[in-house]
Amino acid sequence: MGNSALKAHIETAQKTGVFQLTEKGLPEFPEDLQRLVGNLRTINLSSNKIEVLPPWMGKFNVLKSLSLNHNRLNRLPEELCKLKKLETLHLSGNQISQLPADFGQLSALKTLNLSGNQLRAIPSQLCTLRHLDVVDLSKNKIQAIPDEVLGVQAIEINLNQNQISQISVQISHCPRLKVLRLEENCLELSMLPQSILSDSQISLLAVEGNLFEIKKLRDLEGYEKYMERFTATRKKFV
Image: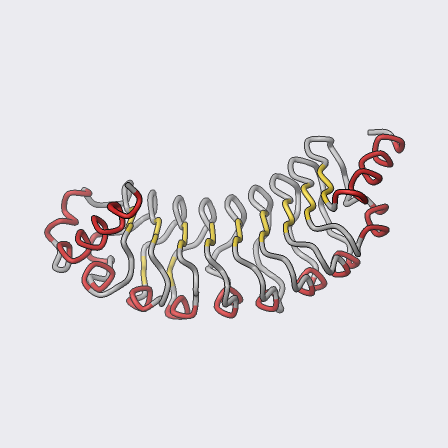
């Protein structure tokens, strides 16, 4: 991609507050974007070949949406955690194995997509994100849902296509959790806490593709209570 084309994109972004440059084989985060740290609200650099994010990322003080799906990132800089206005962060299809220690400081974050990375555990930093609505951790290498999950405020957690065989009963006490996706994991029926059915806010539990027949779910105590929530939610959307 030529310098003049990049320049044109930057000029447009200066007016619109939106910088979008996908599928261009970019090997790095464009240096010239430093000039726009004060006025970019949206950056989309998905489907490139970016391996590293620069430390000056933290200066985008009005940035609301950052999309870096399908790049070559294996870590995120600590400076990213300074983006106090960031509401949407898309990082699917990278090689990220852990989040920065201060990730919980992204206080405005509502949507986080980390699908298709190298996470082996649910990041504990998610527990301090008070406005998180949707978190997608599908297609990683997560093996368990730990007690700390209790602190996650999300309405929807997607853990499809991991290696989960253990679930803490604390998942039932997540205050806002309505949708829990656990398809294609390594769950035995006996490992599914009954309280998810009988004693939680969860109104959609997706567990197809595990180590039990889905119809066996109906035999569990609390299934009827779960179905009441499921049906009530469905009626709202019809």
